[in-house]
Image (cartoon, rainbow, N blue to C red; front, side, top):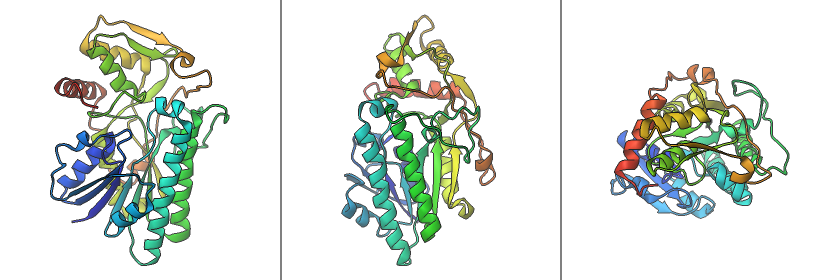
Length: 330
């Protein structure tokens, strides 16, 4: 039985990861401040004898130190999430992304020097590529950000700092670190409250409201089911040669945001209108976006067997069913 420490374990991805780890027979400790997550996400396992849940912040060094004492693996998922939150609260975004990562790495570095070797999975994001114009992103590509007057890029920059710091601990101190860059992870329990596009569309359609597409809707994204992503995370952690490396994790099947809206209306209410809204009206005059985000998964497949098992149509149907079962859920 491994002891796994999961930060942000009450969030969308984190709660699915916690369930998976418990299902594998591991002991799991969770710390989450519930700023964007919810303990309701863990209601199916909250009374599990191998789960220890603490509402708190990963910026609390003493709390982190206690949870790490007997840990074998750490999955660091706690972070600011969602385009809307980033645009509204750039200070929170930067601080929430960088300082807790620094605390975890510092504590793990101390433990590593004392002979207690703990693996770390650092959850990063496709946002680190910024607005790189390449049609398909590879892990060694340049990171291309806009000016500091565009708060949108603060998220990608802050997560890039996390990556630099984690990889520095691997290089300088031998800390076994795996970095995973997530590309538009979707599934049950994801909220649209912070700008996540698929749950936002499904919420609107189920309520009979028009679907609001930002800009011209020709932005391209790839959507991956959370279960596929969790398989990749845990498989990488079980693979020693993944340490010290960065991996794209997601799906390679692109779709425009306008076509995504059309899929949702077709699945729920084909007569619903689709309306367009400028980024300025949706966020602010300083908002800037990336037109396309498509990952190469070649590096991931060179280390683990990986093939997404969930189609986008099946994902949409699963989220619709979940929303109908839990209309007040996150």
